[in-house]
Length: 108
Image 1 (cartoon, one colour):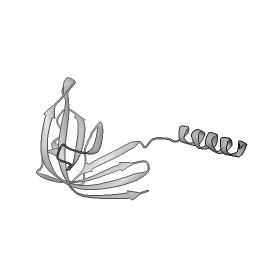
Image 2 (cartoon, rainbow, N blue to C red; image 1 turned 60 degrees about the vertical axis):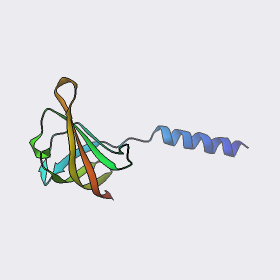
Image 3 (cartoon, rainbow, N blue to C red; image 1 turned 60 degrees about the horizontal axis):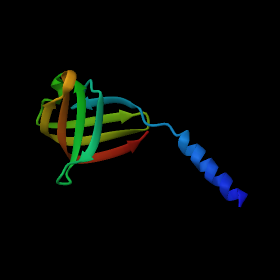
Image 4 (cartoon, rainbow, N blue to C red; image 1 turned 30 degrees about the vertical axis):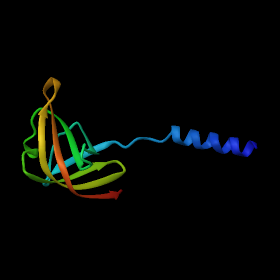
């Protein structure tokens, strides 16, 4: 009985100490792009979408098709995408949306 409790506590402690991934860089067609955050999600129709948040306008993202290379401290993502839309947010932030055509994930 006590062994099960010890195992539960150890799992809980291990999950608590687990670190989240840190974003390192994003390149768009081989050129570094200064972004704040990104996420890959599904839109209302179930189509995968890459959403990128930037501070101001980023010229590297103004193409119809872009090959992205996203790096975190644990993995690298290669995403082929096509431009879907852009929107202005509060305080000079901008949101870019791209339709994901191909996706590859590599662990570092």
